[in-house]
Length: 473
Ligand SMILES: [Zn+2]
Image 1: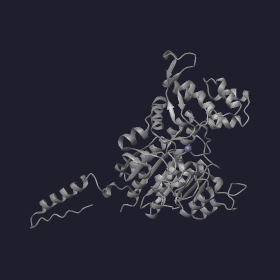
Image 2: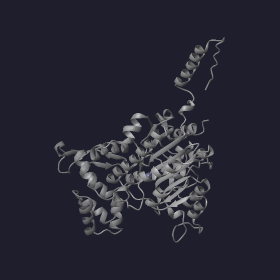
Image 3: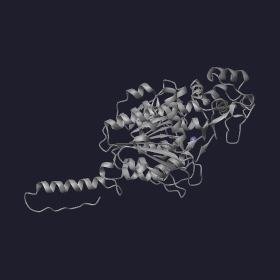
Image 4: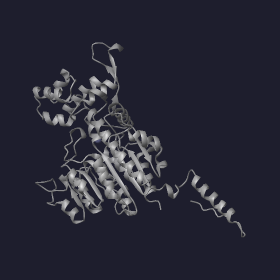
């Protein structure tokens, strides 16, 4: 910031001097471009991250929330409307279609990396991550995910690995970095056989405990935790979808609230918290509309919790975003059947179809689990009648499931993708693929520093914007 000196000489000029200083202050405050004034630097940053979510998913969350539960959707109705809105391209170093590791690495380091890499560039460098930068500035840091906590996105926001599969090495780096909060699934790589999958005989949870962490493993222990450092592991691998969730596991919003509670304590320099719902991506891969809608709603409840925190702590920036779109979600109109191509034989996805989806009581993943690797016709019919009321399984889809045959080259999970197609044929919730797509992702920002995130940007700009805020003095 430039400093402007104004000299007003002589005694008895107090009012004039005050007026001049006020003018200087107002001029500085109104300066639209250039470096942000210090008041636009947040103390706390909360990154709410829905893996696999792009504008089409946010609009599904907004519309379904209004239709099915008469409730506003905070992502669109508060963050996007009251804050700033941007779009980000997502391509990786080697591919038009990114994976989660490369996307999160770009958003964390500002560098494009190969698909599968965790914040390591193709020439082997390890540029600093958002959490390393925050820690260097004396901020507290936290990672929350419904996936294994060593999964690609939280890992790329904090540490480094040549491959996202190096789970044990990622957990070892967490132990060295000591994030103040770590909550999610993935106990397998904190424990050695027979309790876990580590190959070095170590119990890393004990090492965290020795460093002063509360270590918890279910919802009631999480609620009771009172320390300033917290490790919570609630599943061997990924945590459950909301639609299937056991009450033993804390909900996404409970994890978010617990993380904020812990990070707020003893926090003179503020914190950076990364909170991820991975199930929005998993539901996209399985083309599971019923599970996806519920995951978007629970994500939104976490956004509401962040907004409540921000009302008490206005020096907090809330960022809502995702890494890429998953599933090529394409709600549409379609023919009711193939007996006629007349428009009279057509329906549009609307209220009736949302009601049908609301009656589904199981995720497609859990349905596949129940049927097993060699499903029987009897078990399949029973499952559809019990969990998909009002749906009819056409013969071609039934065969695909019974013979465990992929529908297409980009729909490679037979049971889930055939059941999804059953739902699509009667509701119009079609999908373009079982993988990711290059649709740009949205980034909503509300709070000090929000202006940096507006407009059309690249996902590497997300990291650069964060560095401006975290490293600004
Ligand atoms: Zn994915």
